[in-house]
Image (tube, rainbow, N blue to C red; front, side, top):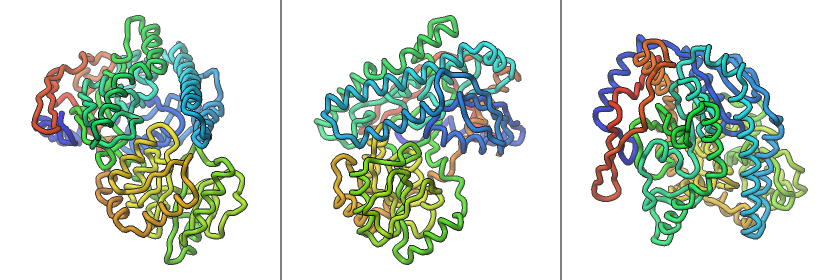
Length: 506
């Protein structure tokens, strides 16, 4: 393990041998257990990439749209999909309500508790569906691909005795560090929701340490029931750490372009920008909008798939600011049309975000700082004005602002003048454009199928065609080796580097 993206030298030999085996690799049968909401957006693109490389994909979900390139297996749950979507939308609306700190904290606690109970009930209904679980066990899958943010997929993998690939953006409470036994020093690795960079003052480090000490307590309400559920289903004692330590490969939908330096393990790969790959020509409607913008170009404005309308007063403040810039603004918005909307602002119910950001006439991107939007901005080298609403969006915005690729605004406190000034700054100050373009190429190659295929090849080697019998060893035992400065290296003694199985058909 090393700080940054370089692995130990023996791993290079393993990678080389895997590459040489590409010609004899075959497509596998993959069970995909996704999350709903914005997490599904990443999975939908991944499914198509894996299928194009010869893999047979089966998606296990409470409800989803049938696709031409995968098989869908559904199971009944005690809630409607609309209930889940409404819950996500409500979280976005709450971000625009200014409340006393204690009241806001209590409201957030109740919200998290309600949503967690909803997701847990869905997982429980899946695992207790004997007919479906028996069918899955008889389907001869090679591996499970899942987002560990919802540990249900990890439980399914243990039930089926299959290797599991974790596909994630991040996990709260440093659960990924605990599961992989990767050091996570609070002295320079900022904790989630700390809004710190890796260059902290003494007081910021104290704050970071306090968060590190309390994060397990904070997440116990959400995640401890999954250990209990796994113990019940598997009929043996299973802890949350057992579930999180079961990954063969950790695939992070992030990149050190937008990530602070930290220790990583040999079985961690960074594939940020995977959602940028499929860029399409603009439709006639949007091409006409862009062409009509003239020399000033356009600004793309979207607060994500779950927040498309905002309180009227705030919408009018935003509309006022947008009307004071010369660019044409394409605003994804489904709320009541602001009465002061300027002629340069076009409201649309949906927009091809990545395609628009890739157009040479795009001058800026107003975003809520979700991981998809951030990486689409980076991939296309577009400076950003960030309006984070909740969750990891705050940290995403802080990192991009620290890097100099955008300006972050507080949606509760910002005025029309603040937004106007922020837009003019990122558009007219060329340093923001330059910082946005620092290393977009690194996010355009997303080797997800490469790493997933590696696990498939390893299963066949270890289990002689019977993935269910593949032995699963204990969590890695690490020997920390400190170096000068802020570098930390660890050696994984529990398995040889070649067992990472990093090969796939191309």
